Image 1 (cartoon, rainbow, N blue to C red):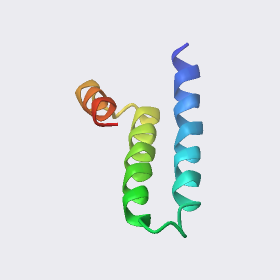
Image 2 (image 1 turned 180 degrees about the horizontal axis):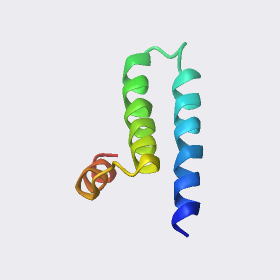
Image 3 (image 1 turned 90 degrees about the vertical axis):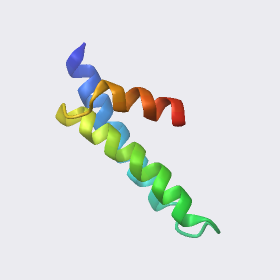
Length: 63
């Protein structure tokens, strides 16, 4: 089950990067780059096993 979450987090990292990429013509592009960039970084850190549980809880509350 743990491996499933690792691979899902890698997939979500790629999806968040793609979502940021398609926002290039949006009027508030920097806001979306920041939102999707933080989500992609958190997913990548989870995949690498470097995401602290406290940080994950704070990010889930902010989002």
